[in-house]
Length: 212
Ligand SMILES: [Zn+2]
Image (cartoon, rainbow, N blue to C red; front, side, top):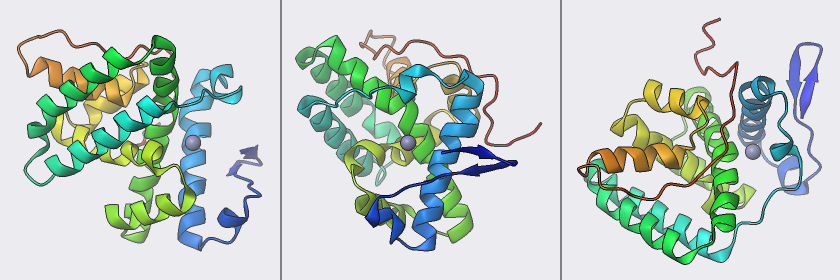
């Protein structure tokens, strides 16, 4: 992916992606465009993203699957009801994993969830797609258990703290999971829950509204 003559380009040679329909290719382009325009430009192409990406271990994948289940279940009754379950999952996850493993997961969450959330919003806006349409596309593209939580957590955060608030916080270097947990702790009488650490990255340019 990169920029040429004022346009952002995404090149891929994966046969599944190449053979996919226009809507799916557009989705991939929006996802990658977010990495370029919102994340890399502001951070001056961080090495942490372009270098070897850390492996997500089985315990982390299990945590993600449980988190998706809890958030999907909560959408039926209101996302606020997921607070206790999310906190319990996170506590259990921290008890059973090393900080290196948590850092690896944090890397993926930090870079991929906002890009995936943005691409989903574009899909919804331009193709009138709903979350089920999105999940079908993501299943086709693979690694759904890592990526699909981007839009799911994004919608939860919209309800819990509001879009402007959480997007501002990820611009300051927090992950979407940090914000989810932060909301959770503030609603539980300041009980201390462990959070995932992510080295702070300052973005000079990131705005879905493109006001400037
Ligand atoms: Zn990506």
